[in-house]
Length: 106
Image (tube, rainbow, N blue to C red; front, top):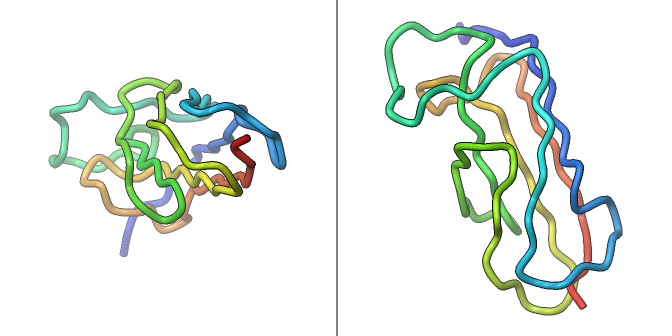
């Protein structure tokens, strides 16, 4: 069975339904956990340490090393960003920690 985590994750920018220019910077808030060093991809799994997978419209675009990540140029229209805090082995925790927001590019 997968370990669980006390972490919470929020996308603080862009906000839901916001109209933005592209490219944009995605801002995240991670609480009760910290980002694991980039080279750490195995070893003992800790619930308070892991990585973030950032997806735009269902496609993985980054595994940010910080809580601010620039996203490449997006076409006009509606888009969804999803961020998931995963264990250091890049697999979801038992209690998945996912945040998502839908916004528009002008």
